Image (cartoon, rainbow, N blue to C red; front, side, top):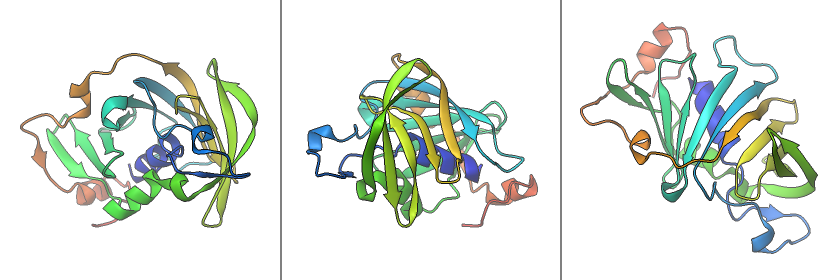
Length: 206
């Protein structure tokens, strides 16, 4: 699950506003900071991944509230991320519990705001999953890679210098139900790190 959360943060939000484009492009030319309309995207995982990591997952964006929901059929929980605060939680419906992400708050915020400090360089256009996007090369803290972003802030492909990342397999623009981006009432708040380690998922302690 830790890898899932990292994938969510890195894949869905590298287009934060304030990123510095090479060549001094004006603010209006920068990628959108977040999907500007509700959308659900199914992603395929590219490159090498841990055996327990999902090979496909979906991300739904509630544009008006800056919230993301990530889920995969191969995992027992779904993730809820608030882009505005950096808070990420794991929700397990079968047990009616919610747990903080294994990522520390400040670490999650660093990933969620990645491109506010990354340097972006335009690198042409492409298409993925039937939608056009603009390629950007990003550099941040000695790391680099490329992303392809739609004009309304949706990531269609993103990889690092090793070719690890995600690509969109399906994109559906449709109104999202805000209730799906809330922790259901009555769920207990627990720390699932110990339970996850017992499943062999290797989560760090908080």
